Length: 516
Image (cartoon, rainbow, N blue to C red; front, side, top):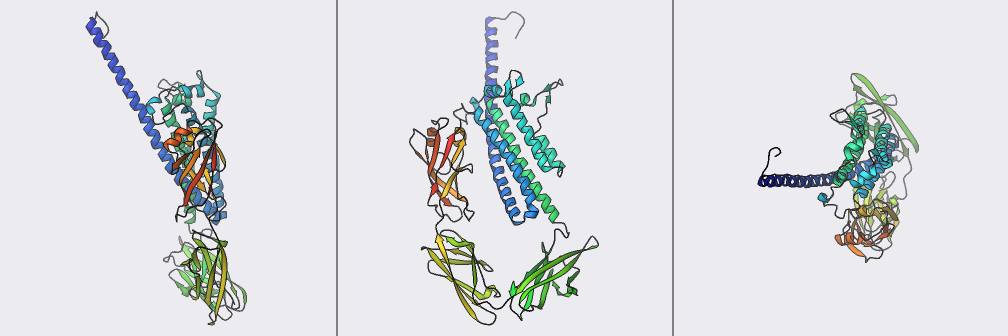
């Protein structure tokens, strides 16, 4: 189009051609911006899903640590450190997201997020990194190094993955010139691209948590599966835990992680060989109970592994007692039961088999058997419920014992935001997309509550009712008028217990202090 003398008509054609190319470039730019926005949505959903799975894994590990402190306690300490480090970096990234989008009215209008000014001014001073830019890079490096330090050198493959995910080394261009990591990935990029980049880092954080949890539990399970005296122990299963004088002690001895095809080559009880009593991988016990008092017995189960004998010891004790005169009843959750919930109840009589014990409750109450000596009590109206237990002793004698439990309603719950109670500081932009929840702190039952609705009050504005767990469109418009330092109140929270649908009578409000 250059060179030679051009006519006025040709000049006009050339100009129109340039305008046409510019228009195509503008349309392509909008499409790219939208693509970044859609990618950010996918990343956000993936982060939410992974967070849910991670929380389940953390919960499972907590339970294991409570049940088996010596085995899973050290793993829980590591997981708690990883969780704390991950939460700190994740919250920092949420703050950055809120900062670069604070002036954007519609967070779904990706085509308008084309300016790099906010982050460029935040991360850079001229051609150099600002203090905030250095802080951002330091936080990524600190997270990576801290996580690797928690893991130690036990899993080199996982550590290599983590180092790669959070690598902040300088980039080299095609001319071999080094470019700072932040400048290469953030300088001059539109807001939506940086927003997506932050979400990618958050996704890496969640995936790192997931990988570490899987590795911690996987390594433990792999160790448990090996046939050693540390991982396998003889388990004694007696038909009863106490015997009357003159009775015979009967039960079985099995190996932990019982497999009916895993048969021992030899079994000794004290100095006596009882290998002939092995059936389907179980050692059947049959010996005199002895006189009244405490009794102990020990033995060894021998298995062959890789051509070598592995001796696994077992031991147990039992009590020989006189015949009881009344039943023993205990509530798994104290001597109080709760209306609208499944209350676990244990019922037993020393020396009496489960089949010879019959419990009953009054009209309006329901008692359901779930296993040997285990029941679920669903109390009705009133303030008390009585469980009457009838038991038949081996002598043929019948005993009857009543037990009274107080009936209470489920106590008041508390509204929560991000798992916090009371006054919770957070950005206004985050509140609009944060679900409102309810919990029962320090309650004896681990209940999951589902919020069905609530009312939000912004200072100077009319209260707005919302259905579900999130702010309605009307509520978001009202929230938009809030200013920094305002105290937003979430009250009149309606919630039910997830499993049985029992309505929670009262849920305390939660307040949010707007930080920006």
